[in-house]
Image (cartoon, rainbow, N blue to C red; front, side):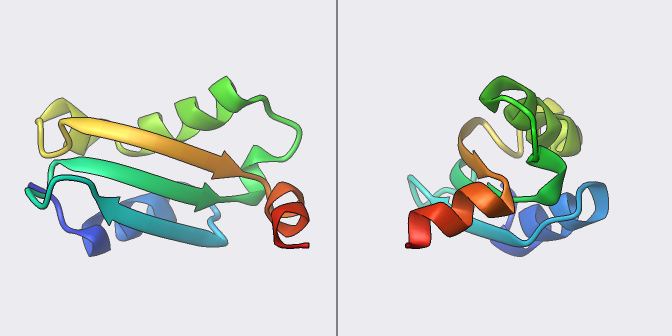
Length: 84
């Protein structure tokens, strides 16, 4: 089990993040949906963006504190376009 705060702190240490939104999909703290906005995603495809997040969360994924992870990743420019 991992808390939303731990997820956010872990991502903040690994990536320059503008926004991290977490949703516990089952209430058990091990199935998560994340929205991550980072300038590190600029110019990268979706798979590369997801790899960056997975790499940042390697430890909690590896020790099964995160069992399932659904990602929505955006560069700041992509995120701004969604807001308009």
